[in-house]
Length: 215
Ligand SMILES: Cc1cc2nc3c(=O)[nH]c(=O)nc-3n(C[C@H](O)[C@H](O)[C@H](O)COP(=O)(O)O)c2cc1C
Image (cartoon, rainbow, N blue to C red; front, side, top):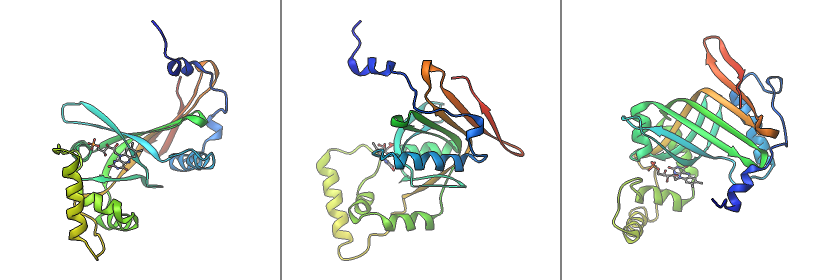
């Protein structure tokens, strides 16, 4: 069997940094912000890109990338279309998982927890900050629906432009945010010989249990 070059590259050693129980903060959101700031300082192209995993009623998982827009003490916020596949699965199951990969720093963060829609005020406030083109696109695109062709989408955008010509573009009722409130957060730091460091926070009755997992 031949191994493509891009795959054989994965055999490289991870040796940049280490992570120990004593290195991490007591609160996982604070620890996340510390690592997120590291990713920003390292000028990674899109440090806020994260994989969002959902599960349908039959237990079938699906995953896609979305952009983190806030990471405050109460959880991880992203925005999307409430009529999309992900929204249906999030609303029905009430749970989500997130994965960040900052591979230049040899780091991964995994998050699991309950998910809920943010308030319509919060969604509208964020929507108002988006560029006009993105706001019109949100009106034009029935995210996750089957559409006939590209021309249909461009026509829908033209309709939205006409509808809101000369006025502000309000937040569509089907557009808004979700907040993932973590009960498990794991920080992974690559180490030599595949003996990676994994520090996992687990929500306990009296705060966060912090444990090391085998790689
Ligand atoms: C880098 C990147 C960022 C993205 N950000 C978002 C986002 O913030 N919100 C969103 O709804 N979709 C985003 N998408 C598109 C999603 O990956 C996905 O195609 C879309 O949300 C439909 O998913 P669904 O049909 O499973 O609901 C992004 C895609 C990429 C590659």
